[in-house]
Image 1 (tube, one colour):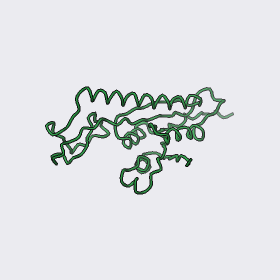
Image 2 (image 1 turned 90 degrees about the vertical axis):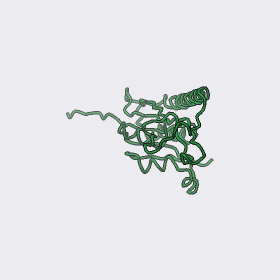
Image 3 (image 1 turned 120 degrees about the vertical axis):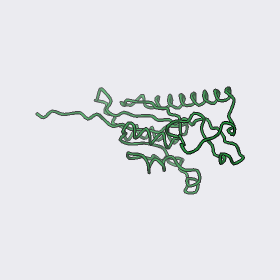
Image 4 (image 1 turned 180 degrees about the horizontal axis):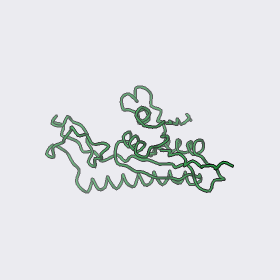
Length: 191
């Protein structure tokens, strides 16, 4: 009789945010994509829930010295722009109290989003890891996929049209072109 080697399972990254589209994508992924064998005592697949916390903006002076660009107060390696420097005397920064308040709100929102996502996962036979990272969602998701060597990235779609997607960009469009794994974009049906 041949020995059967059980596979380790897949690393499935799911992008979550405060939109219903990401919750629908998570629920769809759990129902249709995750190995949910009730006979297996331990989960095979690992679901990695990723939320990208936007960093508080610092606005450069509007006099042209910093090209009027927005930069982030709590920069990370992912969103660092090495060729751009905002001199301290031209940056408009918020007071320490306002910055602390914005950071607390951002952390509370992240906790709320992740709690909701974890509650959705609790009825499925899947290991759940949570990653909350500061930075741009596009870079955070692609960076996480690369770092953990994910098998697939699952994300919702806001359903932007061509013009809106071209003007403001699309996280799912960016990830589908730049992620180092297959990307499954789950479109929420029209209601």
